[in-house]
Image (tube, rainbow, N blue to C red):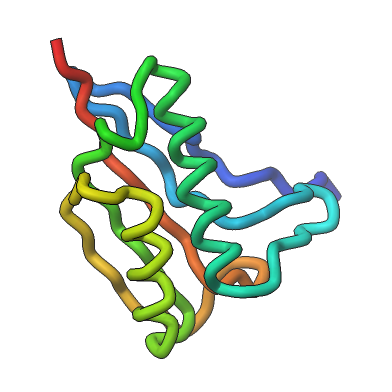
Length: 119
């Protein structure tokens, strides 16, 4: 029997002047699937990882124009909103927050983003 494949996707892709990230989970260690404990820690970890990903294109958090946030517990909305505010400050990308019943590896949050490359 063959070994299961990791997800068949790109972590990010540039299309025209836009950079799209795949959904980012708060996985600290890929082998153990370790995650931070709290929703606040998981949210900050994911936002920081997204900034690293768009940074590979010479962009920063200020270039993120849209996020989609999936949370496994709707009661975490306020905590996520506070971390989101602390991370982005006065910059306000558009955002959707979607409560879901479950996320991969038991994570509490997953975020995908779109960033704009300005000429």
